[in-house]
Amino acid sequence: MADTICRTLRDGGLEGEHAPALTIKDSKASPFGFDVFNYVLTQLSNYILAGKSQSRGLVVVAYSRSPSFYVDLLKRRGIDIASSHDWIHILDCYTDPLGWKNWLIDKDISQEASSLSSFCQDVRNLDKLYSLIIEQGKGLIGQGKDRFSIAIDSVSEMVRHASISSVAGILSNLRSHDQVSSIFWLLHSDLHEIKFTSVLEYLSSMVASVEPFNQAAFGQRVDLENLSMLEQNFRKGKFHVRFKRRNGRVRVMKYLLSWQASNLHQFCLKMK
Image (cartoon, rainbow, N blue to C red; front, side, top):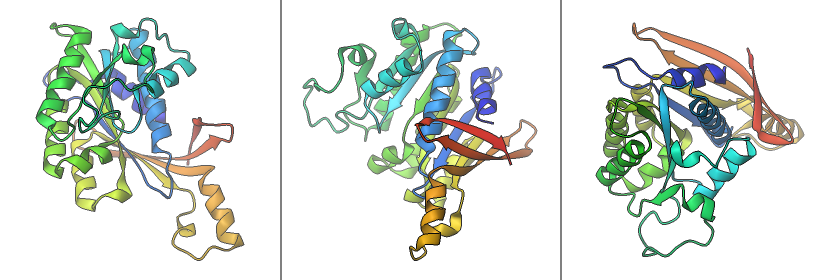
């Protein structure tokens, strides 16, 4: 279940090991990876606040949503924002990704979100981005042996501005940093060649795929039967999770996934 993924990220890695890494994949046929991402983000935040996680802080690298979105998300989930300066930082790659606004303050960012975030104004420079992520993480936990987690809300956006090899390189370097407890990211797989998706899966210790309930409904002529199947895909899906174990073996778990009509962020997973 999704909670198994969250517990793995919560527990972090052993001394000398690379941090657990999760790829969340979706596609236009079942575009709910972001809901899974938000669920994992919320659960890990709860673990950190409760002191039940190896990680003592969380850096959110925000490409596809503004810092205000994440502040509102955490507040809606009942997470204490008042203490958030101590455990979360949002690196804003969304508001001014190429530095065109010349340090102008974006009025769409709330004061609350502004106090928890900082700008990255050249997302093409991944060396600088890497330094900013590590710097903000250390700012949360200090220079001791504590660790922090990293959440990247769109690797697909990253690769729009940088090469495949450089994006894979920064993800690998972050995962191998001795103060990183865990890392997870979202990928819209149908936007990329299989080669890139395979590279990210190779870098990951877990891969969670959101797939359509009725795959046959796509790419066919729309009629009443296919329309019904398409509608099902926006209420149900398949959730496949692949775990790489330390001994090299792979465990695959398959679930049926359904969303409550009133709130897509709330979903339930059932063993297939």
